[in-house]
Image (cartoon, rainbow, N blue to C red; front, side, top):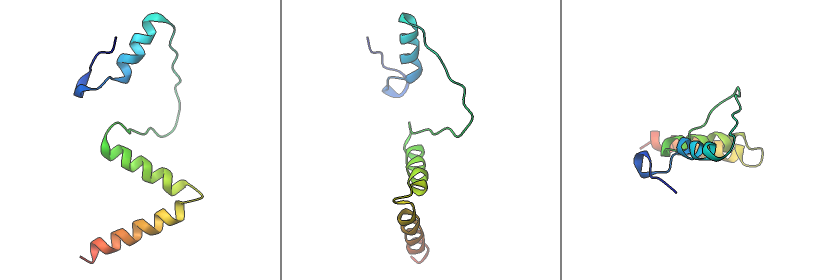
Amino acid sequence: MKQIGAGGEIQLTDAIQQLNDSQSVFAYDFEGKRYDVGEKLGFVKTTIEFALENEEIGEDVRKFIVELMTAKVNH
């Protein structure tokens, strides 16, 4: 049974709890950066960061951002 959570969404924590009711659920504590793609700005920031780190497209994305920022400053 799906229940609607905050913001009209099915929340991950609710889904984990429902799964925990029927079987064991394990967690993994990690060190590193956490990305929040559940909201628009977090999704955009994450996408840009991963694109910049990508060997295939990183340099082109970097150039695009510079061009975009230069155009915005000149207007």
